[in-house]
Image (tube, rainbow, N blue to C red; front, side):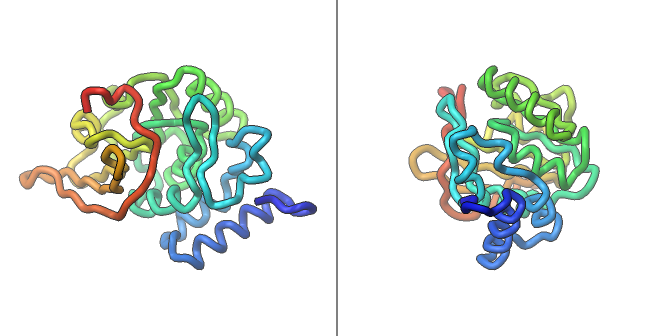
Length: 217
């Protein structure tokens, strides 16, 4: 929360300090990105005092901006490096894409948003704030094959199971981070291997909005 007389920057640094203390942030690159991105610019005007509370917030159209600790955890798990090409499914307000872009650099994040209104708003917001992120409207289950292969991919919405088309667009040895499941959800990391198929690890229970267009799983 932004307290009376507190600047958004001070509130942001206070939030990140708490996330580090609680063990949610392990990588320096993740910490730097969270400190750099003005989360209050990505939430509705009426929610800006809550922008630096560690919880999800509604952004309209039935969608949310993820809690900062979850963005931190997923960014750490992606194990990003500058220059990595990253596919994001579920642009939402654009906050998570901005954090990712801070780590990998401009023009390296490709984000797909199911809701046309959110996609347009996120594209304009990211452009206004100086983030060179590619955003398009579309069914995230299909990924964005024109720019594959990606080094990393992540989903900010929960499918029943991670769509195979997304995994197939990530290079061998790359990584996909996603919530998975209906009702009870689990955060998973998928790593395509040359001969062994896809390696899978789990990282605890989570709660995300369901993936739109996921009627068929």
